[in-house]
Amino acid sequence: MPERTAQWLQRDGLWARVVVTACMLLYTLPISVGFVWRGWDTVQLLVISLGLTLPWLVGHRRPLLCFAVMAGAGAVQIAYGHPLMPANLLLPASIFTLADRRPKNVSLPALGVVLVEGVVAAVHWEESLASAIAPIAALCLISVCAWTWGHASSLRRAYAESLEQAAEHLRRERAHLAEIAAARERTRIARDMHDVISHSIAGVLTLAEGTLRADPDLPERQREALQSISRSCRQCLREFRALLRVLRDDGDLPETPAISDLRSLLEVLEASGVVTHVHADAGERQTPPAHQEVVYRLVQEAVTNTQRHATDVHRFEVRIAVIDQQLEVLVSDDGLPAAEEAETGSGLGLRGMRERVEALGGTLEHGPQPPRGYRLRAQLPLGTTTGPAPDVPQPELAR
Image (tube, rainbow, N blue to C red; front, side, top):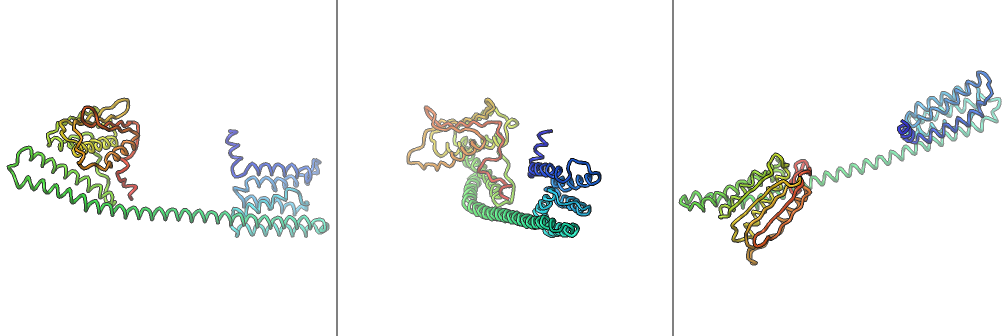
C-alpha cells in the first residue's frame, strides 16, 4: 500500500503540488486565520483558505473544477470583505493549468472571471482602495501572465504532437511505398523464374514422357529412370508453382514436406543403381513441422550434390535420430570426388542449408569422410519455436 501511494504521488508532478499546497496552508493559516478564535470570522477564513488551496491538488486532472472551486472561494472572500491572503496566489496557478490543458474558449472566460473579481474586490474595499489596489492589480497581472504562459505551453505541445503525427504519417507512407516496391519486385522475380525455370523443367518432363510413349520397348532400367525423372519434374513443378503464387500474393504456402517424403527423393539415385537406406528413429508426431521441412531440404540438397559432384557412388544413407533433445541428421555417401575439370557449384546450396539450420538454432557440419565419400551432419534443438525457413516467403509479410 505505501508503494502504491508513493507511485500515485509521483505521477503528474503530484508531489510538487502536495508540497506547495502544504506550504501555502502553513503560511496562510497563521497569518490570515490566526490562532485566536474570533467566532464566525475564523470559520469563514478557514473555509476560504481550504477552498483556495486544496482544489489545486487535483488541478492537473480536473482543471476546470479546480478553478471553479477556487474562484468560488474567492467570491466568498470578496462577499464577506476579507482581505487578500497568501492562498490567493494559487488562483493564477489554476489559470495556468486551465490554459495549458483546456482550449482557449474555456480558459479565456476563466481569466475574465479572475479579472472581474479583482475589480469587484477593489470597489468593495473602497474605504482602503489605496492599500488594496496595488496587490489586486498585481494579482490580476500575474493571472494574465499565467494564462499567456499556459496557452503558449498548450500551443507548443500541440505543435510537438503535430510533428509526431506528421513523422508517423511519413513513416507509414514510406513503409507503404516499400511494400509496393517489394510487391513489384516479387512479381518481377516470379515472372522471370517462371520464364526460365518452369519452362526448362516442363521441357525435361515433356522429353521424358515423350520418350516413354515413343519407345514402349525400352529396357526396364531406362524406363524406371525416365519414370523417376517424370515424377520428380511433376513434383518440382507443383512446389514451384505454389511458391510463384505466394510471390504474387495469390496463394498460401505449399504443404510442408515431411520426413515420410524422403523416400521419394532417393528414387533418382536408385534409378542409377545406388543403394539407398533411410533410418528414421524420429517419428513425425514428435518432430515439429519446421524441423521436418529442414530435414527434407537437407536431404534434397545432399542428393543433388551427390549427383553433381560425386562419381562411382554405390551407397547413400540417411540417419535421423533424437539424441538429448536434439534432432540429429546424418547424410553420407561413398562416392569419389568428380574430376577437376567438371563444373563446380556456386556454393549457394550449402549456404542455404546452413541458413535453414541456423534459423532453428542448430549446427551444420559437412566434409569428406575417409576413406571415401562425403558426410553431412546437422543437429537441430527440438525446443526451438520458429517459423518457416528464412528463404521461404511468408504470406502475411508478402501482403
